[in-house]
Image 1 (cartoon, rainbow over the protein chains, first blue to last red):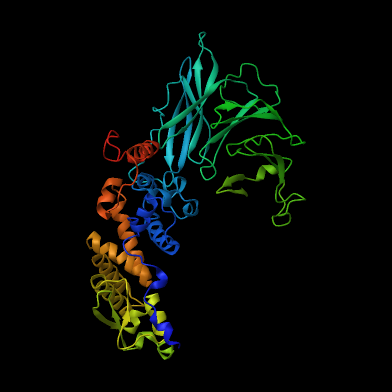
Image 2: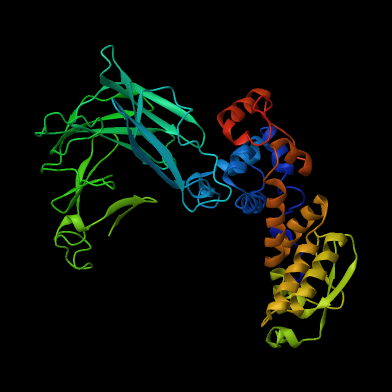
Amino acid sequence: MAPGMCAWNGAWHAKPGRGVIDGGDALQQEAAGRGDDDLAEKIGGDGLLVEILSRVPYKSLVRFKCVSRRWRRVISHPDHRNLLPRYQIQALAGFYTDYHIQSYDRQSMAHRFKAVPAPEPPPLIDPSFSFLPKCESLYLRDSCNGLLLCRCWKLNERKAFKTFNYVVCNPATKKWVVLPDSTWSRTKRPYLRFDPAVSSHFHVFELVQELVDYEEGDTDLDFDGDGHVLGLKVYSSKTGMWTEEIASRWGIDIKIQDGPESHLLAMESMVAVVDVEGKNWRTIPLPHKEGSPLCGAYPPYASYQEGFIDMSQGLLHFK
Amino acid sequence: MAAATDDAGDSNEMIRVVSSDGEHFEMPEAAANLSLVLRHMIEDDCADAAGIPLAVVAAKPLAKIVDYCTKHAAKSSGLTIEEAEELKRFDAEFIEVDTDMLYDLLVAADFMGVEGLSKLAVQRTADLIKGKTPEQNRETFGIVNDFTPEEEEEICKENEWAFQITKPPSRLC
């Protein structure tokens, strides 16, 4: 063994000193604008702080952005995203349910929230959405990564429901955004898309479908049609505006798969995909369909209705 | 390399370590092996009578770490439920220290590569800070608030909901 090997005195680990949590030298250097400090020290120190912060609840983590510049940098750094608690995982997961209350002359909606798994004590969630601006009738239409999309109906002067606003809210923070007035048509079907890992902005899609016959006297306010998709409009919270209607560029007939899980469109054993700007339109064959990379990996299905499709953590799942 | 081929658990050899402030400590080789850094030194035949110098670990935390390693090395594998629980109790008592010592242990355990102790200290720190306000954490760890008042207000405002724990939002941070 070379004698030099034994001269180790911790030099390769820089000088951890008191820099792990308080920022120490690194902090002063940053404050003085003298540029980067010793990289090894920075990585070593941040690693420990990340370890600690990975063990606090999400709410504490958000609060701690306010401790110092270094803490904010460590908490907000994209490399730490998967190591630190995230809202969807640490906070609350559950189901909101709507149910109708029918009285003599009108129907109203009530809402329930069921957290999964049921925490003890129950979460401080107000399922009546009392934090939202007042509306005559509120319908939940979609949810995505912690945000909810509702239709908030207004009465016009003849006491008839004609116009509404989409409201996107975060029940955990009780913040909400009211979208511009919309006029209801049974050919439109709304969806919410929000991915905090990509952007803090959300998008609301309104798929425009072919008008199909419906029964006279059908008064269900929030029944959305089931015709073929003709195109869509997109609202972006960044611009605060709806786009013009963009005609479908899928090239084939796409019909919305019915059922509560209809986040994506599936028909002809295809998943139809469109990006948030309405620019990129494509279809993905389902696993049992010829042309799919997974063809043969699954037993054939009698029809698409047996499949279940949804997104989770950036992956498309098919069952 | 003779030391490395011995069954560490049965080795009675004592390993000497020297703190940054010059104090000497001794622990069984099996205990020293719980530290990645010490294990590498022993494997490289660097452990001698003069002791392994730990240039950044002071005597106070080093004494604790020697205790921790000695206790855990003695009960390393094949624990009964009772022994495992006793070790858990030992850990819980061991980490009941003031914040200065906790801080020193955090840094030293990380530095010496004592995984179990590092996890214990990290968890303890997380438990200490999680219910606190940013200001309380600054006080606890001597952190300088280097935000301008405007910046601080903006961050607080952006994340207002996270501050609504026990106090009204009028005094956010």
